[in-house]
Length: 424
Image (tube, rainbow, N blue to C red):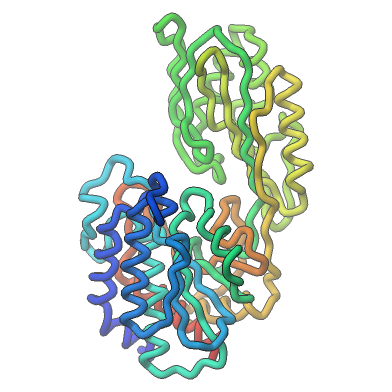
């Protein structure tokens, strides 16, 4: 057992107790309140974290309740570990109170344990271990705690107008070994006049809808059931909207619905019929999901989530999808997105993280590309490093979210070793 691992084992209960304290704060975004831009609860979680960091002897700063930070020392930081303290709403299906940490068979269950309060606690105790074991550092380290990652990362955007990020940044808000490439993302909202039917399906643009209810004069004429899933991995789900459009277009002839059926065939997930269907060697096939279709005030409104590969541009892909929708009679209400993100896997920063991962876990390290976007998507040179391990599912965003006690400790160990590797 290394010195770091021994230290963390000795502080296991303190780590878990502090995680329980953070989980107890329902830090879901709410309306701005005074000096709390995302509501009182995210600000309260940040206050508790910064108090704990200050008690540990670190130099803390609260940037107007958007973001807080803790510096290892007075040395200008070269490395930042970026986590967030806001969480998604609890939803349904829990077997225990989401805001009371439950220990069960080695699991720590509660909202935020995996995403991202657990990793935030691990990052703090990683830096505490390095400090209290007197590991010498030549470069500074900064922990950064955000409060709006789950709702657009306005926290980080604001912070970057006030403070400069260190040259190396990783976030334990993804998975191991290292996520160095993330597809570009586009979200399109469109609509048209429509009075034929009442349609209800999909409320969240980045989720594949599991149900589509279609009625006429209050009588349900279609009830299509699918399987929900994240829009970045639609091949693992079944889209209830495209299922309905397929069934509808076999018999009925409304031009808008039949047009959508032709653009989004049931079972297709790469947007090929829209004129897309791109792929590249690193990030693989793109995804294109018709994730929302609802009638409201005489309008048919829809939403599309697209994740496109590294070799394409936001302008190119958005131009194609918008033109395809306009050709079948829809108006584009909004179309926004981000370019793909990639950090050189051969950079010394990435290679250092891979060495640490291999040393601590004994497994081979490699870089991976994902369709989802992480907290570092718009940070040059940033990568995701943890906190979930390969083939692990902590029910992130779902009921009974958890991190194991072992992985809470192991994440802290990996982060401590990364601090020493990069800044020692």
